[in-house]
Length: 463
Image (cartoon, rainbow, N blue to C red; front, side, top):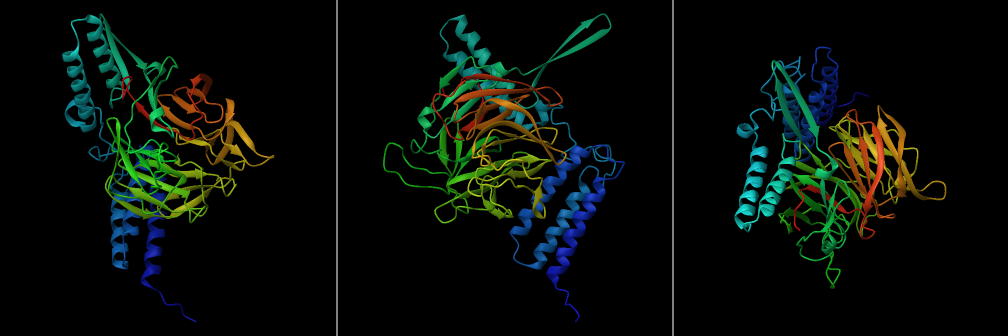
């Protein structure tokens, strides 16, 4: 019997062929910028996924494929510039964002203007006391540390004809993290060296507004997604489709909503250089094993590929520049998956039946899994620090105290882990090669906060 070739089959073949060609291009020996190529191709893949999800005809899907092929070809190391950035120096991924940043980098300009505004306001409101003025300049310096292109301080000393440049990396004492727990009125500001922990004032529609919400940065702003929204001090109601943005010190709910109720255990991740967020998994009153995902671009939400496995409390971070998740609370499995242009595909199983852990993406494209609840061996909190690298899981260290339900954030060369069971705040320090050097305890949380929202900020934010 002859099989009829349908338009859908042709489109599927073209999609597979395009992805195959993309992989072939990546292996070209002339490519000088493989990491930039990977980053560019990831953006192309996600744009293709979004485009195809919004299609309702084969002609639309064909147009998406054409756009995807053009995008892939334009990438450094693609068909249009096979040698990398040397062939297309003006490609957005090749431009040096920090060269003449005061003229060309909008993010730097906005950050600088905010710091200058705060400095001007601080100085004008100071009494005639030198200590107050010095404090203003100290706060100004701390704000600059968070601006793009000022991640490092460079000093140059000239002696006769010799120039020496010393680079001083940001120290933990320069790191400040806003922690928003279940009760918004218990928010606090934590210093990276453990020297200070100060109550912060965050305004929200009700005190339980951030409970079980996922969080991610979109266009430089902290956003929270879903969760159990109800007033801890009053009757309240659930609001598990909400999206809210932190403006200054206030969580403002947006009119746009999630496509699906995500009450608990869902995850969010900044993608496409922070322009969008990917929100996946969780559960609601109708489905305890949600596998779906959606993409938020700051104003709208669109659905994208659903995973093959559910990953309630399984985390969501980048592995090899692709969104990835591991394990599950309700499923109690050890499956790992990663999202590409063609959907979710399997990664190596984690050695444990794990959930409630924190995932962290490293710049070397590996991914760490920290803490968590191990459902094997009669269950219990685990202290392991695991690394997925080159398709292999290896334990590279341990927390000082076993824990699960904690949140982690990567700043500079340090990961800060805020424990739920132990309440301990632990700092994991890495060298330039991102090899774990030490684990130290820098303090305790005021209470046992379950998956608190974390946000890198300045020393005087909302205090």
